[in-house]
Length: 325
Image (cartoon, rainbow, N blue to C red):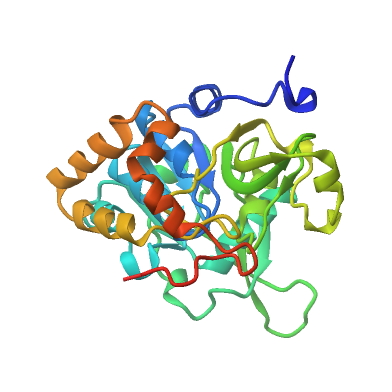
């Protein structure tokens, strides 16, 4: 009998979650932001299972985005920004893929991408805004006419219309909604009833989850109902939004999880160095992704000393004194 009977049908391994919900050609949204709360454990498993032709849609992202692109899993990308903060602005493999035309790519602003997910969450086909007016985002499209004929791709980047409630000239931008096949989040807590709690900034994670057909959540801890019911205003998603739950401590490494651990500067520097060269990047994948059989083995490879070094002070949420060079 499961220790958590209410979510027994949703609890699964990384391998099971990816195999069940993520297929070749899926439109996939990943939560987190640059080097914060990237669902790295799931991203590595996607690479190991050699899922291909993913249509990736993100608010702004970093390490997981870069690994998925570098491993050849991504065919198409819609995003505002891809970067690992000071360690790689922009992400190395992402930049190379765009420069080499190895992926189909279209960009929006951060706010525009959030609005697109919000439209999907509200089940409306588009959403109006003034964001982008006067910028080059309105002047350039990344997708060809042929790409725009494909499923899950908007037939135009945006539309401009006159505000129907104003008699004066008042131009608006209409942005197409996003409704991913799957959204993947890494969070601090999932309750034994399936309730999700994200501590710290949520970025566009909640909108991405509500817009998606299926939601995979990996978490640091599964906690008692009494914990989830205390401070209920801190909860982020109700159980019925979640389709798969995987407990994966340190599941965002080398990115940070507020209140649990900081990002890993040593690993991010190693990644930047190896990602810059095609041969070295293949060696990185062989060593850190294909070469480990489980997440426990991955953490063993990272090393206990490193995990202790990046452990967060629970009062301030990050690791004070961490050498971030």
